[in-house]
Length: 215
Image (cartoon, rainbow, N blue to C red):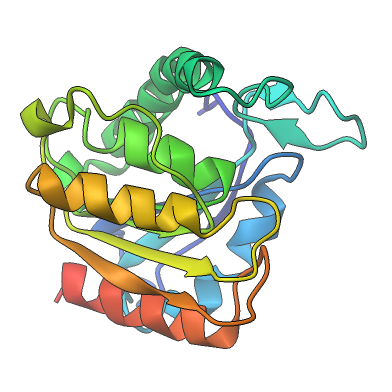
């Protein structure tokens, strides 16, 4: 079967047909191969899950062979929202295709994002037609808050470096505040001295969150 996005896969650690689908959404200028390297760390937490990490649909405007979900040439809230909204149907079509292929439902789906991938996860995930299992987001931001109260409310776990120079830690606090005020259950933490990356503490924190989703 030809999928809408090129992707990288780690089969279930149980070696059984997948009972869950965990989709990893990379950051701006990266690719799916980057995040699939984290799947082995979480495989024990979800041994029946297949991990899939797609390339974003568009070539990165900065060059270098990477991909982007949307342009970051203009970082104003209006442009970020427009870019996220434009990319969401592409992501949703791809997720629908994966779920149908593996005979799974939205209740079996979790999204894991880094940076721009977290922006996509936090926008698209709650706006799926059916509630997904959960969202794990690293070093990202919440785009679009006006309609959050009317969306489905999967559990969300956010992790962010306090020394992040790319997506500053105030974006973490903004996301936690707005999601919580709109009825989402939000867990996670900010990490002192961590920049725009995922550290061992963040991996283990994500591990515990994923384990809880599919326990």
